[in-house]
Image (tube, rainbow, N blue to C red):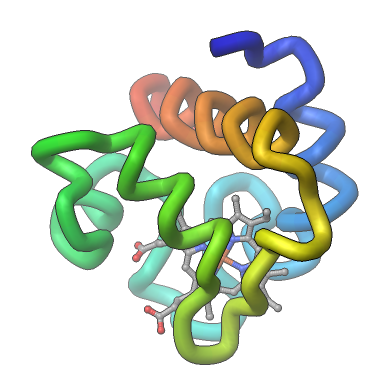
Length: 89
Ligand code: HEM
C-alpha cells in the first residue's frame, strides 16, 4: 500500500482525536501497538484490515469515514497508522 499521503490524511481527519497516536476521548484506546493488539478486534490476525474496518465503520464516539474518505484514502491512512504503531509513533 502507498503510504505517501497517509500522514496528510491522518492530520486532516484523525489528529483532532488521535494526535501523536493518542486518544483524547478514551485515553487507553490509543493507536500504539499494544493498545491496538488489546482493543482492536482481529488486529493480531490482519492488522491493516482491522484498522480499515475501524475507519470505515467507526465505533462508539469515533465517526465512520466510509462516506467521507475514498477507499484509497482509507487504505493509505490505515497503512500510515500501522507503520507508526510499529515504530511507537
Ligand atoms: C479508536 C483510528 C478518527 C475517536 C480508534 C482505533 C483506531 C482509530 C485504529 C482503535 C484504537 C484502539 O482500540 O486502541 C482512527 C483513524 C481516524 C480516526 C485512522 C481518521 C481517519 C477519529 C476521530 C475521533 C476518533 C476524528 C473523535 C471524534 C476514537 C475513539 C476510539 C477510537 C473514541 C475508541 C472507540 C471505542 O472503542 O469505543 N481510532 N480514528 N477517531 N477513535 Fe479513532
